[in-house]
Length: 426
Ligand SMILES: Cc1cc2nc3c(=O)[nH]c(=O)nc-3n(C[C@H](O)[C@H](O)[C@H](O)COP(=O)(O)OP(=O)(O)OC[C@H]3O[C@@H](n4cnc5c(N)ncnc54)[C@H](O)[C@@H]3O)c2cc1C
Image (cartoon, rainbow, N blue to C red; front, side, top):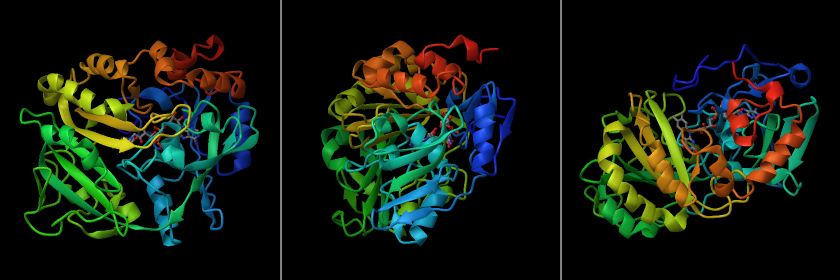
């Protein structure tokens, strides 16, 4: 068994897919070493275990909407995009989505997955409660206001096996997507706030090619964001770029057929906020990903500083994506306590593709850049408490919730300190 990109071979002996909550509780209680697996889209070994993998995709509870409180319980094993379709069909939406809907609800929130938008928080920050099977097999519910809540959402699978998630919802809305080609780094850095506040969700894609030019993908919320002058007319220009005529893919030389509709088509929120259609392969598949979440106040300086690495980044890169997100309070969120900019790299799967990670970490880490938990990074575990101010509180929570270390793996041992009795080293 391997992860989505195929480069992590899991050590687990088997994957259990319990059909009932009772079966799951028994399995967790009786397993010395066990770990929840979502859809295995993470690029590092965070989801691995040398014990048993468990998927909650078989539990199949229905979506329960409380329209008074504007919240919905969704099954943790459901793909985010499927939950989005079901919410939309009943007139509801969640504020934001990642670039793809293929990932599970639980896996999404466990790693602080995010989309983009100056006014939007990470997808984890839309969580108002979670139901989790703890190490003893007990089912507990943790909701906003509980002392452990802010440590229990972006939880890296370290606290238990999540079965259902309570998401904050709002009435369904519509989005139009536009792409502008040929926006230079210089224009972006000059007019950074204008670019990212121009629509509900904005991404800048660049290959760090010698011309230092990229594309802006703008997702404009109907009835909320003002249209840009001339955005509907052929030949419209903005920030020095030109409105794209054909459909674009984030990766150069890839056909846009698998991407969500662009060119201003009016779409339900869940068909426009992700870059990739749910029923097709997202991105390239033949890739590795890295991302750092940096303080927004430092983003322009850091992006400028990265230009000195551009000649060495470019040959190994499919594409980089720059996104924004609003601060939240979740202890291990990349946006904890500060408005944040995501600086992302989709690397080609070639030898030496990751050779720049230490230099990227040194530059972005010195400014408090936090590595995305589900992607590849070279930050030392010792450096993470400085970057995540509540890291020590999370380690204490993990040790309290899982005193025997049954949810531990090598990745968590490195982060939280090894526990010999359950080490999954061979
Ligand atoms: C093509 C592609 C595009 C991506 N785009 C984005 C993006 O736009 N934004 C972004 O932020 N990230 C993005 N990612 C990263 C991705 O969102 C994260 O890696 C996410 O965690 C994947 O979810 P998953 O269901 O595959 O989780 P997995 O990789 O299976 O697991 C991740 C973690 O979640 C835990 N977990 C899973 N299920 C449970 C459960 N039931 N209970 C407790 N813990 C659980 C696992 O133990 C593990 O620690 C992308 C990844 C790919 C491959």
